[in-house]
Length: 183
Image (cartoon, rainbow, N blue to C red; front, side, top):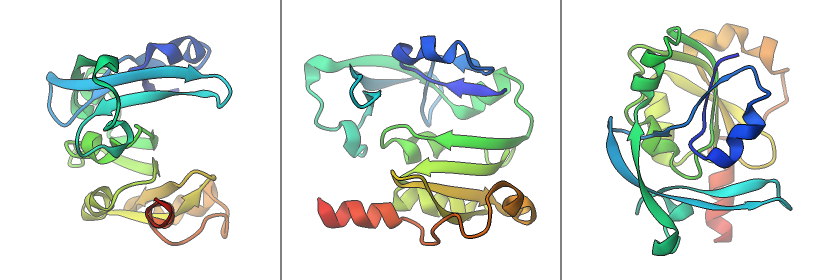
C-alpha cells in the first residue's frame, strides 16, 4: 500500500501488480519546473534502466548525450503528498533517484511530514546534513549498493522491531567514501 513515484514508463507495467498507487512524475525542488531528463535503455542483463534528471550537480547523468535528453515538467514532494492525501507520518520511503537524492529532498515538507524509516542510495554530504538538520539519524547500511538507513528520532524506540540489532553497519557515507577512493 502507498505511493510509488516513478517517472519512467518502462517500469509502470511491472508496478501494475503492486498494491501501490503509481504517480508518473518527476520530483523537483520547485513546482511545475522544467527539468532536463534522460531515459536510458533497459538493461535486461542487469535488470534495470538508466536515466533520470540531468543537472550539473547530479553526476549520474551529467555526461549523457544531448540527443538523449528531453524536457519534462516536475512537481514537488509537497504537491504529490497533498494531492494523494498522504498521512503526516510516512512509515517508509525508499529514495533512489540516480544521483538526484538531495535535489528532490531539498523542498521536502519536513514541517508537515515525518518519515519513520528512510533508505537512501549513496546520499551525498549535503543530503546527510539536510536529514540531520531535520531530526533524522543514521542507523546503518542496508544491502550491497550503498543504501543507507535513516530514521526520524521519534521512531528510535521502535527501530529494532524493524531491523534486528547488528544487521547494519554503523558509519554514514561508507559507500560514498568507497566511491570517492575508487574513482
